Amino acid sequence: MPEPPGAIAALEAALATRRAGTRWRTRRTLQGAQGVNVEIDGRTVLAFASNDYLGLAGDARLVEAAREGARRHGVGAGASHLVSGHCEAHASLERELAAFVAPCAGAEALLFGSGYLANIAVLSALCGREDAVFADKLNHACLNDGAQLSRARFVRYAHGDIGALQRRLAATPARRKVIATDAVFSMDGDIAPLPGLFDLARAHDALLLVDDAHGFGVLGDGRGSLAHFGIASERVVYMGTLGKAAGVCGAFVAAHPAVIATLLQTARPYIYTTASPALLAEAVRTALAILRDDAARRARLAERIAQLRDGARGLPWTLATSHTPIQPLIVGADGTAVALAERLWREGIYVPAIRPPTVPEGSARLRISLSAAHTEAHVDQLLDALRRAA
Image 1 (tube, rainbow, N blue to C red):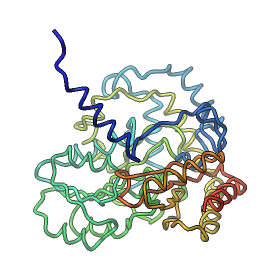
Image 2 (image 1 turned 135 degrees about the vertical axis):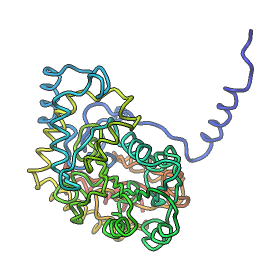
Image 3 (image 1 turned 180 degrees about the vertical axis):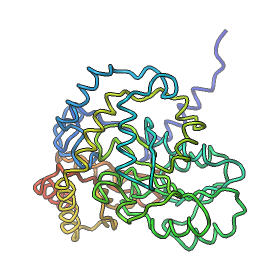
Image 4 (image 1 turned 180 degrees about the horizontal axis):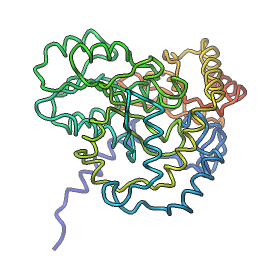
């Protein structure tokens, strides 16, 4: 019996419409390890595209830790953490991470396969129909998805607007309130007003969920955005990722033991997911030791940020205000951003163009991502290419 027509045809028509515009997404293929001089799609290019902020993703010490971890633990975890997949490497890493970021006295930590899973787990486990999640309008998609999956009331406030958030908190009848925010916003590079958010959380007896994907390892002597502002409290739930500055893979949540126990007992993305390989936990433990002890990497990163910002002053495009490794060059129109990225690509420099819906309409940009592995000459090469393009 022939299949009914239309289902695939409708998908193909929608894809054709998208392909005809300026928002068709494609993937470039990396040959070899992450780094600043890499081979992509058969070309050697200077890359400003990775979230490998400290240049650890290809570090020989992490590679050796993973090799030794594979020899000791094998490759696969085999089961979820609650069945038979929780290894001593996981347990050790969780203790070390909790002590390192220390969101409160006696904090514990729980590992997840990704930051996306972690945020969905936190919000769906801590919130329900009688609760409310208050979210910055520029939050990452996983915080938004987690809030919606929780079935709590989802209340968004204008980016960084403490006053707007205060009014919404004061008006809510919710049983439990959670303020959810990126610490460093992934497409703008700016830092959330965490002290103000924390004050509101205390005033309204709310939990504060901080997604520090882009702050962990970089800010606060590597301990992240909470340490950067000197915040520690039982009402803070801290999420950090391990595939950016830490150079490996996965994520963790650190919080009061009651929060961690709640996640372990009820968070479906934790309970029903096979554990990450223990070899990755061993690699992260090595990365964590480097984060603690190698302040020189963060110093080099700060130098490159200052160099780029100083050198970009004469460009016709706006470099958004950011003191983090994420340096967005706002171009405006989708097509202009794509054309500028292609111009740089032809000159052997890879900087991705970011377009709506990832960023607001009219704010397409080049997302320049800096690393401690970039040299002064690398940043000068990028600036020279941008001046020629201008």
